[in-house]
Length: 100
Image (cartoon, rainbow, N blue to C red; front, side, top):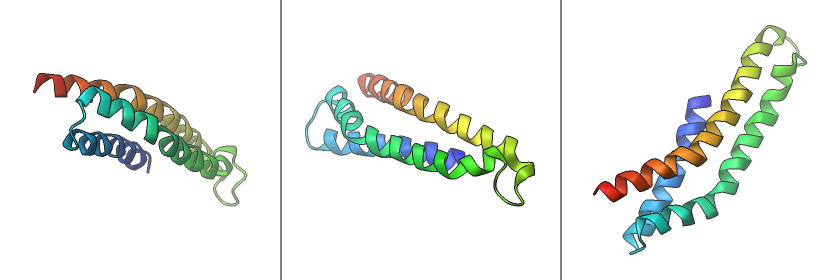
């Protein structure tokens, strides 16, 4: 679940930037536009999944008390992964586009 959300967010950013590049925008500007327009959907996804995992992480989900550590790790990984997606994916994209 965690890797699916993180990869989906990265694909969302890269796809939007590639569409802008095909429209004739410079790669640096295209990624900045992608960040400006797609940060909110990425954060909304992360917050929604985090809110859904809170009962599991707190151990208040009936029958899932044993999975509380897993829920806490999923929430922590999602927060870190979302931050890294919004930071490193644009940097790597701009770096690779400059190399072309």
